[in-house]
Amino acid sequence: MKAPDFWWRPPGLAAACLAPVAFAYGAVAARRMGQEGVRAAVPIICVGNVTVGGSGKTPTAIAVASLLREAGWGPAFLLRGYGGRLAGPVSVDPARHVAGDVGDEALLLARHAQTIVSRDRPAGAAEAVALGAQVIVMDDGLQNPSLAKTLSLAVFDGAVGIGNGRVLPAGPLRAPLRAQWSRIDAVVIVGPGPRGDAFAADAAARTVPVLRAALIPAPEAAASLAGRRVLAFAGIGQPAKFVRTCREAGLEVAATRDFPDHHPFTAPEISDLLDAAERDHLVPVTTEKDEVRLRALAGSEPRLGLIRTLPVTLAFAQPDELRRLLAERLPGGRPS
Image (tube, rainbow, N blue to C red; front, side, top):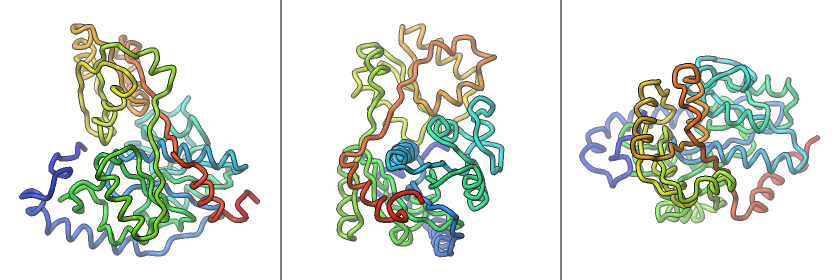
């Protein structure tokens, strides 16, 4: 789904027309969030967001898992596997699974730690524990009440914040904000921006810790592309964020193509894109998340190898603050 432009502007006619539907949707979502969840056998760290798509949840989940590993914990990832056909619980194997099986985010996470895809979150948590997980990092699930969380982090893109502040479909909020605040233990603001600053101030007023972070391009990939004229394309929640990252890394973005989040690329689409890049002497560049979906076209487009990837990692401005939060919430501050 491609987010409509009016979600990111001050509320207008479109948001007003959809207000009755948004009210009904929000009421159901808020009531569902109030349910009690099952307590898993290990701590659950939830990395979610209050809006749909594009905040930086997956890089944040990877960074959190890295800090847990440094502290001596054995983390595993748990997610629904959006865009995949397998209901799970299933342990993700990048050598065997494709995005159509488990979703693109699961394949990225599996590069860093044991990853379980399960639409039934408690069943997925039990599978992760059976496979040896000492702590579970949930990618998404802030609004899902099925599992009790030990610590919940809400991730925001500093450039767009919460958009127009309206609930789906009138805006990008997954549930009324007042219902979500009670489920948020800390806020992660990714990148600069006045909208992120405004939300950080709101969080601080509620005595909710605010963690600042930034997406950092992989140095080797950035250096190999610096100064090159590129065609930047992405099928993520906020494609403009990827374009900004390319420019900040020193790439000359001569053309862009945006696709909906989790877009299943077709051979004709990529063939047309590669034709355009060749015609204008541009290097096609995309995200890691898009790259794992492109693998499905390996047998139908021989020029896939021309597409370059610009990976990013998330760096916390003050990682010790997150370490403190984790130590406070995890039993004994270390694995048992």
